[in-house]
Image (cartoon, rainbow, N blue to C red; front, side, top):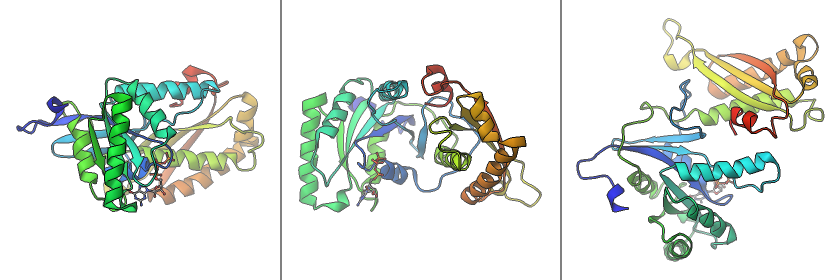
Amino acid sequence: MAEQRPDAAGEHRSGFACLVGRPNAGKSTLTNALVGQKVAITSSRPQTTRHTIRGIVHRPDAQLVLVDTPGVHRPRTLLGQRLNDLVMETLSEVDVVGLCIPADERIGPGDRFIADVLARAPRSAKVALVTKTDKVSRQAVAEQLLAVARLGEEVLGGFADVVPASAVTGEQVDVVADVLASHLPAGPRLYPEGELTDEPERVMIAELVREAALEGVRDELPHSLAVVVEDVEAREPLPGQRPEDAMLDVRVFLYVERESQKGIVIGRGGARLKDVGIRSRQAIEALLGNRVHLDLRVKVAPDWQRDPKQLSRLGF
Ligand SMILES: Nc1nc2c(ncn2[C@@H]2O[C@H](COP(=O)(O)OP(=O)(O)OP(=O)(O)O)[C@@H](O)[C@H]2O)c(=O)[nH]1
């Protein structure tokens, strides 16, 4: 992999990475540590990927876009099957995959299973990240590094790198960024500087609306409500107002499966939807710290849970 590392001339690199690992391995915490805490909301759209962007690491020499990999689910419904396809697709499309394995737990079948999956995605570089190193002794970290390297040898012909880090103390997080960036191809910035991600907030906005929309009608609309944040756009700031304080237009689609469910969400004369709008707007304003104009639309997407086309439209 030496040819992929930044050259002496300091050529700029850019590309995509994803962190994988069994539940609780420390993926989210490490993502946050890599990206930094501040999450900026923006109205721009991802240009080069259909995958959910978790965060963007901006550096002078590289731009690293961290994308989400949906969990590995058993293919019971089409939704599950589709998630599995998505996992393979994501793993094959990114430039580098970081397999997170906690320092304080033995390597188990779950880690081996995921390493096996990685072996089937030949294009991307595979890096192992030994997480939560603050929880154990240096000796134990060293032993885990060896065990992880062995797993790599056995399953996928060796990891390109094995890096220990603690997302909680921040120790070695910069090295993780260095190593991930070293596996990106040469290329210009893909996103404007300052853009971190709009995803966590979008996900939270969708959750707030979903919660409000389901309140009191959970039995009637068990799994039949998908909420998609279509657009978040800042208005022109008022005179004397800082741009980051400007009012936001938030457009949200609520997808139900049947016409009858649409009626439930909207309520008589639109009263229920209006109430959902008021309650979720207050929660969204509290979340973002901006005034918000919330536009809710209810749409029927029949059998969205089983229809691949609908699933893509809904972002699965
Ligand atoms: N001490 C310590 N704890 C950590 C570290 N990283 C993560 N944790 C903790 O480990 C737990 C799981 O971390 P997450 O980042 O949520 O793990 P995940 O892999 O994203 O988990 P899933 O979302 O379930 O897949 C949380 O309680 C974290 O606080 C670390 O570097 N040190």
